[in-house]
Amino acid sequence: MIAVVTFGFAAVALAGGFIAQSFDALKEGTIRSVGHLQVVDRRAVGRAEEATLEFAIPNAERARGVVARDPDVAAVLPRIDFVGLATNGTKSVPFLGIGVDPEPEARATLASELVVSGKYLSGDGGDGIVLGTGLAGALHAKVGDRVTLMATTPDGALNALDGIVEGLVDVRIKELNDRYLAGGLGLVSRLLQSPESVSRLVVFLKDDEREDLVAARIAETLQRAGYPVAVQHWRELAVFYGQVRLLYIGIFGFVGAVLVVIVILSAAIVMTMAVTERTREIGTLRALGTRPAGIRRMFLAESAVIAIAGCVAGAVLALVIRAVLNASGIVLPPPPGATHGVPINVKLYPLAYLAGVAAMLATMGIAAWAPASRAARIPIVDALAHV
Amino acid sequence: MSRAYRMGQATVPAVRAVSLSIRASEFVALQGPSGSGKTTLLNLLGLLDTPDSGAVFLEGRHAESLSENERSDLRRDRFGFVFQTFNLIPVLTAEENVSYPMVLAGVAAEERRGRARELLEAVGLADKLGVRPDLLSGGQRQRVAIARALANRPAVVFADEPTANLDSRTAEGILDLMRTINESSGVAFLFATHDPRVVARARRIVRLHDGAVEADEAA
Image 1 (tube, helix red, strand yellow):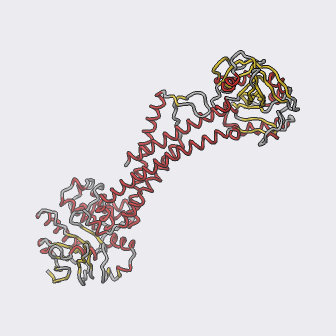
Image 2 (cartoon, chains in turn purple, green):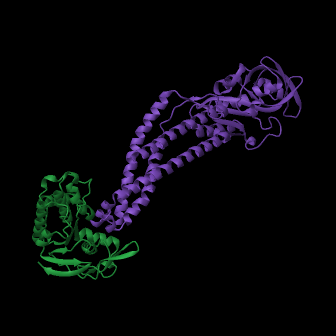
Image 3 (cartoon, chains in turn orange, cyan):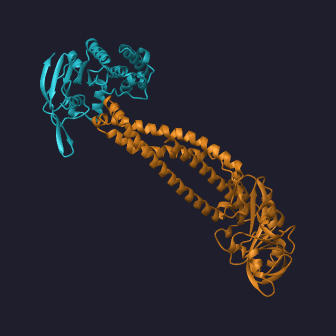
């Protein structure tokens, strides 16, 4: 019986550590994409723009400087979101564009790691552009080719200019990969004829824990500086993160429920056998004056002792397996949205160990209740006559 | 009192219209062949079972009016039990087995320990305090069981074939011990037995046949 609890506990503790690692990897990948915080015009919250840069942050360099001066901020990346048509002279394909400050973008995000051909933008980006491999395929474009970009300016005029393909990236999400285009802020501002305006400021922090504090401080500082902005947290922006997290919780929750059912059934069988084997002893204890509730308590207490002993053994087993796995060098497949696999690193997650103890105590209690109650109800003379 | 058991479709009477009174300090043997109802009668008197008709009165109290917990408390405080197969708790030492009824009665640990040692000394097992039942002989186990039966200073000890699993010499020793305890402490003893040695030591013999009292006489 202790072995069942031991393995059950070890499974809960290890699964907890593995889930914690998965969530951490997912969180890190998400933050490297959307930043810890994003500063947007207050009107942009929950609304789509009717025209390009309708809800832009003006005087973006000044706003960027204000945010960058915060001591908890590691990097501030200005971004312009826009849409348009890319053409190679014979074929036009719609794209989803992003204007970036190339050097800090490459340092803080996964952008440069996605490059499969050529290189990522450098310096101020010049006339360089980076295309998703899907978009490049549709345009038959390769590194070094010129592509004409057309987009509407904020006042509704159509503008066009040429960009030079510097690199191709694999964005991993096919729909986005077929439409992805990035260029330097200078090129995009010229295309949109909207200098000094950006759609958002993506903010990376030095310390995750201070996110709420820094968000409030940045919002206040920018408003004092005359910017009517809102500061959004990465969790609000990454709907995908929340969905994947829920999916993981659902999967592991289901597996955990199956595990608990197995432990309950095993424990119930063993406790039923224990009651049967000890029927005569139960009769003796009842004859000596033990109340029915005392018999029930005795079996429940025994199940609790088994649960605790199993948890102690399970904790040792979990720690040993964790050490072996973490030393194994096994590389897990990339989490959703990530580009690289991560070496397995099952975390020591104390909450999982506490949850394991609670689950095993509850499980053993549930499993022991019916046999213990049955033991308490056995007629004494029948119990004493049991062979 | 009457008590019958169902065996398949049939109802088998085990005790039939028995009326019996046990007084303080008595040393009584229930004698009869197998199936005569000795154990059933002992179980009914010891509140281990309930009669189909009739009633048990203990010190003037009607046992039928008692709840299950009250019956348990009565067995704990006023009765002692000695079984044919000793029925000691295998994982407890001799001292712990004797202490168990006192634990149920809420006796303080220090007092429990002293009383258990005193009783084990009285039954000649002062050197077996920390020994578990599986390392004791049959006679020693039955002595531990007698010490346990006396732990809460009962009014009466019910003994069901207490010598059946013992050799002659050991059985004689056990019977002498119980008789000595009866005489020295005034605890009543009621035996179910067909062992003539037990009957020979009884001061009152109740003979049962087919669940009914055939004779009730002083020895």
